[in-house]
Image (tube, rainbow, N blue to C red):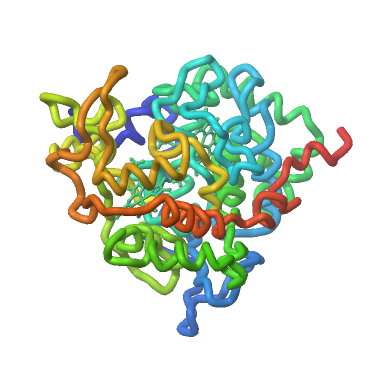
Amino acid sequence: MSLKSSAQRRLPALILCSLLALLAGCPEQSGTAIDDQGARVSAFDWGIPDHIPLPYEPADNPMTEEKFQLGRHLFYDQRLSVNGSVSCASCHHQDKAFSDGVARPFGATGQRHPRNSQALVNVAWYNNLTWANPALAHIEQQVMLPLFGDDPIEHGINEFNRVEVLASLQIDGRYATLFAAAFPDQTDPLMGELAWDNIVKALSSFVRGLASFNSPFDRNEHSAAARRGERLFNSERLECFHCHDGYNFSNATIDRTIDWIEPLFHNTGLYNIDGLGAYPYPNTGRHEVTGMASHMGQFRTPSLRNVELTAPYNHDGSVATLEDVIRNYAAGGRLITGGPHPGDGRISPLKDGFIVSFHITDAEINDLVEFLKSLTDESFVTNPRFSDPWQTEQP
Ligand code: HEC
Ligand code: HEC
């Protein structure tokens, strides 16, 4: 396995080069203004409670309402694909917290993605992106994968069709207005390579703005059962909080009050292929990117906010319900007896130390599920700011 990051591997060289300027412009972990009162300075209205620290904004793509609104139009526009069949929203539905309800989605040309479509919830607060890519720290880099990647093909935009795809946007007069408002310093923001840089920046701004911190749990309105589940979640018996920790329920959380956090990935024992000790290719987790045997099966801890809405679960959508996720943890891993990937994840030699079996009753499983459901933010999945703008606008 090569040491190239999967970001590089999946982007055709030509497109990668033409976008290198953009990548190079991405600072390591820099933000806009950081004040000493908890980092609350931004030109953008994040719509989040005061106790949640603001996320970083890249110095070369600070948040503005105009870029967010342009990004929202692009996110819901199928013209932004090789054959007009796929938009970001094809795999990221607002009512499912921007996941899609299927185990593994299909791209514009019918190719199946090896992984489960991720929810897009507080993406701005992650220190690395996708299920397990330590090399992807910036949303601007991530967004190029579905647009231009060819393994798998999602939107299918490449050097042969990009002029045509762009032309399908240029003929819509509404984009002239939206691009001009989003990039007021540019004379021709919808022309040539600059337009693609702008598309990536605007889409990233929209995704970055998808913040969700208004669940019953946040309002301290969760039920007695959910409170019992919360105590279980935070218990040394179940260990959940060791990885799903903090205000975003993930140890991959970064914000402007934190300079740096160690990139953490965990093997939760979902697979242990007999004789190989490996996860099914290409879903080998951090190992897919680094090639290191010790990284086999390690994935980023996902936030559990809105997790009620994002079934099926785990990196390949192979677990149907929250109850099943919990039963796998209780067993200390997953035993698969049939199908193409039989094996005993409970004895995975690379399993994380926090994944140890525990006894749990059905009533306790119910309470734990009630707690996870109390993290569902109805205002997030119905917020008109995040919805399809084309539905309400006249052509
Ligand atoms: C064909 C389905 C599909 C399409 C179309 C698609 N995505 Fe995704 N998205 C996924 C999958 C699958 C993942 C997980 C990828 C991985 O782990 O390698 C993902 C992951 C992401 C992530 C990372 C989230 C996180 O928590 O790290 C972001 C951001 C994202 N997509 C944004 C977009 C945007 C913006 C577009 C449109 C340009 C888009 N996606 C189009 C399926 C899709
Ligand atoms: C060692 C760290 C660790 C511990 C402990 C842990 N998790 Fe996880 N959790 C993860 C990782 C990593 C994933 C993604 C694994 C994958 O998909 O292969 C995950 C996935 C999940 C998912 C699926 C999320 C989705 O979007 O598909 C749920 C639900 C979940 N965990 C709940 C829990 C609960 C409840 C506990 C306690 C019983 C717990 N976790 C303990 C690290 C951990």
